[in-house]
Amino acid sequence: MEKLKFLGIGGALNIDLGGNSAFLKKKDKLLVIDACEGATEKLLKNNIFDGIKEAYIVITHTHYDHVAGLGTLIWYLNYKLKVKTYVIYNSKRYLNHLKRLFKTTGVDLKLINFIKDIDFSLGDLTLKLKLTAHEPTLICNGIMFSDKEGKYYYTGDTNDIEYIRKMAKDDSVKIIYSEVFSKDSDSHISYSDLLKIKSDKFILMHINSMELYEQIKKDGLNIADLI
Ligand SMILES: [Zn+2]
Ligand SMILES: [Zn+2]
Image (spheres, rainbow, N blue to C red):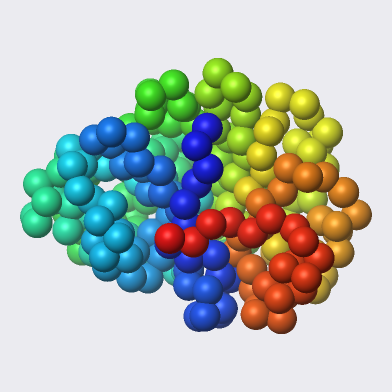
C-alpha cells in the first residue's frame, strides 16, 4: 500500500497541525479518510481533484474534527466537479448514524452513493471498518486496509491500546497509523503507552499538542506525511 498522505495530523484542538484527515489517489479514484475543516480547500490547492472521476469518503466517527469539512466536500464533488461520490459504511446502524448527520446538516442524500466497506476497492486495496472504543455516545471505527503485501491499520480515534498491541505483534500488519495523546486519557492512546510497545510499524497522527509533536520528532518516531 502506498503511504497515506495527510491534510492534517492534529488532534481536535491542535489548530497548528490541522484536523486529522488523509487521502489516497489511484488513477481516477480518490479515497478521503475523514473530512477535516478546510478539507476541500486543501485538496483543491494541492491539485488532488485533478483527473478524478470517482470519490470515496470513509468517516471513522462523527466527532466534529473529523466531519467539519464533510458537507462542503460532498457539495463540491457533486456540484462543481460532477464527480460520483461514495460514502463507505459497514453496518445498517452506522449507515443510519451517517444519514442522520447528513439530514441534520442539510446534505441531500441523493448526492451520495452509499457503499459497503466490503464492496470498495482501490486497485488491489480493500478496507474494513472495525468498531473501536473512543466516545461511548458515538459509533467509532478504526480501518483495516489490505492489499497483496499485507494489512495496514488506521486507528481512528481510540482508547483501545490492547488492540494496537495485538496489531503490533501481528506479522501480517505492516503499518499502524496511530492516534496519540500527550497524557493518559479515557478517550485516546497515550504516548507513553505507545512507546512501551516498541514497534517500528507506527506512523503517528492526530497529535494533540505541539509539545508532543516536537517530542515525537526528538524521539525519532515516524509522523504521518502532510501534503
Ligand atoms: Zn479526533
Ligand atoms: Zn474523536
